[in-house]
Structure formats: structure tokens, C-alpha cells
Length: 260
Length: 346
Image (cartoon, rainbow over all chains, first blue to last red; front, side, top):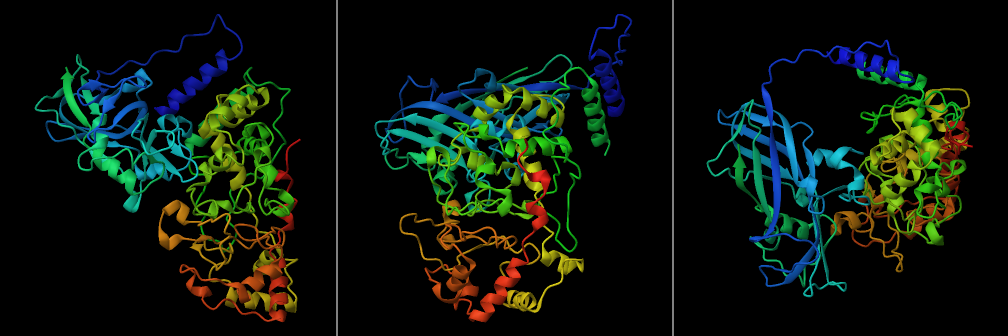
């Protein structure tokens, strides 16, 4: 099948390459079988406690009473899986998504080819699985030009939060949390499954559901470890500090509602 | 296999379509671009699995290796500090001068047989041959650039758009394609035709004299546990008893792992082509092999992470040192040094 499509495509390239041929026949469109799959959209809304995140201009107060504004918030979501009511699991292939507060389009994406059915749960990894951290040059969301790859100590930055606080112990008064590490004791990868709270996402020929998730940045600074920005302001390599923050942010996602 | 044929077919089609400028030829015609696993060697770590070797991919990688646009101010290429005539080390440079004349703090190693490396750089911080170039490209004292800037420069070059088109089927340029192409060039830097190799393979040109053979015996007894044949390294991180340079304070592997047991450990370098790659050690502190051997003989310092095999140094008589050097000289691969495929393209 693939070979046939390829051959047709190649012929099409060959024939259309140089000039328009008025006698050229239109390539017949193969008949489409009845669909058995749809899609599920995921939408991420970034919050700080109950307030929507606004970069650069709005101050927020952390659990430690530090006042901070944020300038950058980016993270990877990977290995998305949906569980159907019958217990079967759909895993998105090549499931790597980079979400960036500064790019509105990145905060909503659609998972395609999801079999029809009622889904009761979602799970995903915060970050990029260890295999892709050791597999060389990647493409798509994993391109090294996305500002999420350490070039001197190979590996992805799983999540990145930057900002500014007068309480920061850094001379620049900045905070810079680049959280990464994929192996051994430095592993910060978290697989989470925010609850649907009894709702379902029902994929059918007429419905492509949308799951709205809230992502609360205040969680980076608390539970289980309250972060004091005076002493922990800069993280730029794997290690204990990165693990502390990842343990904190593991519960930053919750499902707000599902549109069917 | 089908995929390869498909790609080949597509390349042929594109080759005949209107978009390729016939005036622009590949940098230099190359042949014999294929993976090599010399007789008796282990399987390589990297076998171009997701990055199929091609003449056009290699030609692009070769052009990029010598391309100064990789640096912020277009003054430094990979080839600036990795010179073929010294096995892609930096001749007579303890540290290389990067952008704005700034000096690095580690000696540029020779580049060959990289497909067997389990990690890259003296501290092993880089875990895959394909992402290795990101280190020097972004290092503020080397090229001080980033791939977004490089992509933008390359994209405005007709020559490079053609080279990417030939290598990948379209002229779009992204970091994966740049890194794939450089990995094809760097991965093709095979060095396996020294006198030692001819000797091991029983080929013409491999006749060792008595002194070289004596040196080989000494090597097997005293050096081979770390500089393991046939690659002449075990790729492990070891503290070989160098005193710390108090200005650089380079803790080596610990810089990557953050672990005290890795302090002052550096990756065991290969001894292939060692006669040409002076100065020696991670900081280029020794100018000659005599100084290196004297270090092992009498200069070992123990900061607590000293390699277990070096607790008593490696005691060598003057005659033994001469024999050992004679053997080390047989590790020079003149075919590699003169291989036209690896030269800077015109």
C-alpha cells in the first residue's frame, strides 16, 4: 500500500516537476473506508494559583511569600495515553509536544487516530523519555533548536521556568529553573494521570472531544518542598535541586473540564 | 531496504527535476562512503541507524565541518582546531584559540573512530555523536554561536540550499539535518591502516622490527588495561595522577556528574596516531611522549580518586621508554592523514 502511494506520489512529482501538461490525467482518489477513529484535543491553561499566568508584567506570591514575575514557561509533554472504558489503552505514536506560554498555538494540540470509544483517563510524561535523550539528533518538538537541550551535558530540559524576584539570591535577581535529568538518581521524569473526575471523553464519528487541563505554576514552589528563592534561584543541570522542583511540579496538572 | 530504495528513487527524481541548479556541483565527488568495521574490532556504538550514509550526506557534512559560518563571526570552523595532518587534533596547541582569540581550557583531541565512542569530550558530557557539534558551536570561547543563527546563515546560501537538497531531498535546513550531515563526516573518519594494523592483519607494510616488537610487549603488559586494543582506549573516565592546575581547577568528569568520586577523572584517550597529536593530556601540559612517560614513571599525584592501576605509577627504564615510543610510532595511520575525502573542500 505504502509502496503504491509512494509510486503514485513519485510519478506525480515527475510529471508536475517542470511544466503544466494540459493533457495530464488527474490521479484518481482512492475510496475512503468508513472512519473508525477520531481525535482528542488537549488544551493547557497556565495558572498561578487561581490566576491566569501573564508573563513579564504581573507579580505573583509563592508559598514562601516571595514575590515573583515570570518571563518564560516551557515544558515537554510526551508519551500520551488514553484509557478506554473497556480498559484498552491508546498510545499516541511519536508523542512529543513542546508547550510554551509565549506561543499560544502550542497550548492546544490534537491527538489523531484515536479509536472511537469513551475514554476515562489520560496519562502523559512531563518531559522527554530517557531513550530520546540518548538517541542523537531528533526532529519536530525535539529539535535541539527549541531551547530545550543542554549542549554540554547532553539531555533535554524537561521543563523551564524563568522569572525575576527581588528575593532572589542571584546578583541579577533572576530565577532560572531548567529542570532536566533522565538517568539514575538524577531522573526527573514524571508520568502523571490527572483525574477526569468522573467525566469521559467520547470519541465518535460526530465528536472529537477537547480536554481542558489547568497547569498551576505555584506548585513548583511547594508540596512537598517549599522553595525559598533566596537560596534556590538557579538550576541549570541535573541534580538534587532539579529533582526537588520536579517532585513539586508533578501535581501541577488537573483536568478542568471535557468538551464532548 | 524498501525505504532506502524509495529515498534513492526520490533523489533520482529530484535530481532530474528543475529545482537543482546544474551549475552547482557537489563539493567534491566522493566515493567509497560506507560504514567500516575493521577485522577484529568490536561492533561500533554508532552505525548510522537513523542517518543513512550517502555521498551527498557526507559531502554536506564535510562542507559543514570546514564551514566558518558555524561560528558567530564567521572566523572559526571545526577544521580550525581539528587538522587532518595531525589526525584532526590541533597541532602544537595546548589550548585552541576560539572566537575573538579566546582560549579554551582543554586540549583539542584527535578525531577518528568516533563511532566507537560511548561518550564525547574529555568529560564525556555529550552522549551521542550526532549532538556532539552542539558543544563547540555554542561554547562562548569556541564558536559562540547557536544552531538557529547557523541555520539562518546557511539558508541564505544558495550553495548550502543545493547541498541540503542533494543530501535530504528538500532544501529546508534544520538542526537535525545539520547534525546528521556532520555525523556522517565525523563518523567516516576511520583510522585503521597504521603499521600496527598491517602487522595485526599480516599485510604488507606491517613488518615490525625488534624494538617495535619489544615496545608492543611492554605496551601489552603496562598500558593495554586502559588503552585497550584495538581502539587503544577503554572509553572509561580515570584519574591518571596529574597534579591539578590551580588556575583552571578542572575537575573533569565531576563537572558533569556532580559526584566527588569523579573528581579529576577524564576520558582515556586513544593512542592511535599518538605521535602526531601533541601536546598531551586534557590540558596539553606535556609536549612530548618522553614527558608523558616520565609522568607515569615518577610524577603521579594522588588526590584520592587516582586510578587503582596507577597507585605505584608505571616504572619504565630508559630503554623501555625508547622501545615503547618505537611501538607508539607504529600507530600512525598515514593513509588516514592523506585521505582526500577528508580534506577541506575547495
